[in-house]
Length: 133
Image 1 (tube, one colour):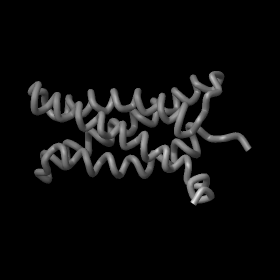
Image 2 (image 1 turned 120 degrees about the horizontal axis):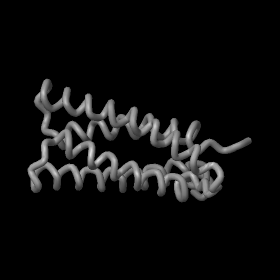
Image 3 (image 1 turned 45 degrees about the horizontal axis):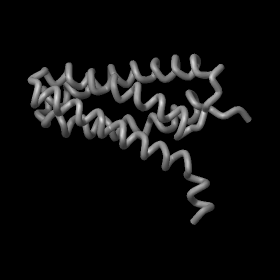
């Protein structure tokens, strides 16, 4: 069991941090849309940005344990660049799934978050928080 945990340590940590970021994002999305009355796309962007900030800090220092400060600016740049691409795809996906397909905005965000999580794990691991060999 210990060998399996060690082998999949980064993946497990990524899932925990990503799940926490998703919970933050969904909470903000719901609060801003249903309670405060913001348009769902505006709420989605706000929620996404808060989750990205949380996610970078937790992914860097816990999930991928990259505490090298000299790499921080490069990692932050790559993380933000990838996040901006994700934000654009997420916003387009939200609009399409809600306006064209008719999905409830929270369900649309659930599907989009799941798809992005799968891709992001491999991108973060191999590009942003890449270990030197």
